View 1 (cartoon, rainbow, N blue to C red):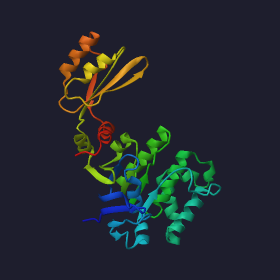
View 2: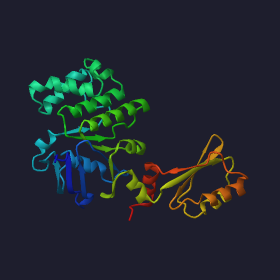
View 3: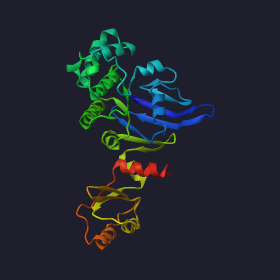
View 4: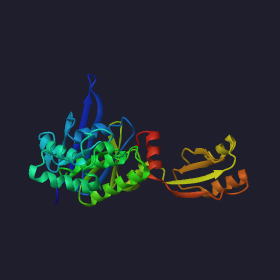
Length: 320
């Protein structure tokens, strides 16, 4: 049986004289080829958890094991088995080439001298930058620099790769390329811990999800588990020309609905109706006929997305 890429046990981290608890009893496991997406609002404890796993921050209590190595007792050895990708515009010597940057960081990571050229070539190949290896990083676009950050994280052939907001601020086409790369790395057997604010991205990439709120993991499972715990399983969308407050009150009073949201675009009011129980579509269509004389042709009822379920959870607060 293969050793997990990550085992984090009962992590706790306190800060300051008042001993503020940022992370409380967090346990996570990532196997080879698994993508675990850590979700949560700002200040929930995501960054602190990632820093403890990456050995940048020692836990107040609890343990981290990277590919079988105790990261608290042997942080240097654990770091040799993980890759950390923080991304952003900085982190490289801009006047140096991509290859020379990676050779330098391979040296910092302790990659054996005889392996460095091969590791740099393989990392550049993995992120499709071999043809730009000799170009100065200063000439790279933001998306290319993000790919180079990932290449840097791959230099030591890590069993565990930590990706913090890897597509933040990127153009859609570049973000798609990064997601494809993440899928490829997972298919090659790399365990990946991903943080992202893009819920559609999490839904596309994650084999498992963990939702952290107020420093605690409150849900762990797949997309279906998060959707089920949110209570919002189905959503109806539609648009109307005119919607008065009285009309909205009539629709919102239909049983089984969560918070109805509206958005005015292109001269029409678009409604999103989250169902917390069995959709009362007959009641809804009846109200729409009475209000507008007909059912809007764009009315659609579908399964809730991860983003809609996540928003329902973080808006209400910690699920019970």
